[in-house]
Image: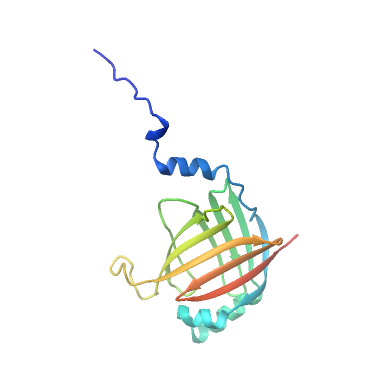
Length: 179
């Protein structure tokens, strides 16, 4: 009885995804690790209006921007943990960068968020693409009833920037690293 012979794989037979991951490992990504304090927030009112954050929710969002801290842990440039601490809420999010399954959670406004994280092509920014389902929408029953949201996180001159866009309005945040 003959045993099956292992098939050899030539470089040309490799899938593009495997080659892309191999190239990504050569890229030097920025070090986001640490405790970051929000020092500037721009376009909050227009952003909140575009995102449907109004009335008391807007008041709470403004309050949370005043004392906003993020503790970031990036492990092997693949697992991103963001712990947010504000006056109005605390949350911990864990993303697999380049993962195949979206990370789902409820935000402080009770919206359901389904998000995926990737590195930018140059490997210098973390991009999170999300679907935001309003609190009264069941994503299983109405999978197309959502708003798109993107988050881009990057470092520049020892500061961390976060740009969150919904319906064409972008909230721009600047953070300083705490010692």
